Image 1 (cartoon, rainbow, N blue to C red):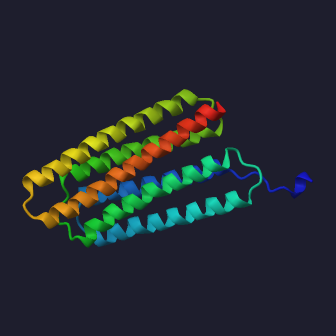
Image 2: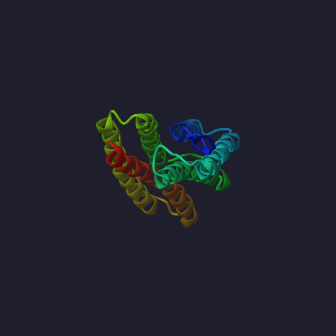
Length: 207
């Protein structure tokens, strides 16, 4: 009977692949913001990574549906891969808007938001491998706390950035463009906090 059951899938590898893929996209975003040239090509590269993220997410969920025994609760696996994919979606949205809206120069606020996002994703990529044995639950929790702190920092930069737009920019269309870009990056940071909350819940459940 046991031989008829599907072999347990290594979903931790799926999480790690998705987190690393998100890290690649954020690294490309920061490269774009530090050297605002060849924008179309760089945005295209981010889009390709986002497509790879969609493929990984679909593969993980498809595998989940076929796997009888899982290392974690099914709802935790689904939630984790979905939120990791969301990070990529909003990175892609922010980069794409900069190209579509013909942005000629990045603001300091968008650079700060990208930096905060990069630090958040880095914490995620360090925390996820620790799920494999949960021998270091305190380290995972500490990284989750750091991500929560970064989310608060992102909120502050977002608020100040929008306020600065209304104070200093006269063209309402330009305000709308940048406000949308800021919101996409701030939402990506929020999704990092969602990932942290899921990780914390898993730790509390299994450690």
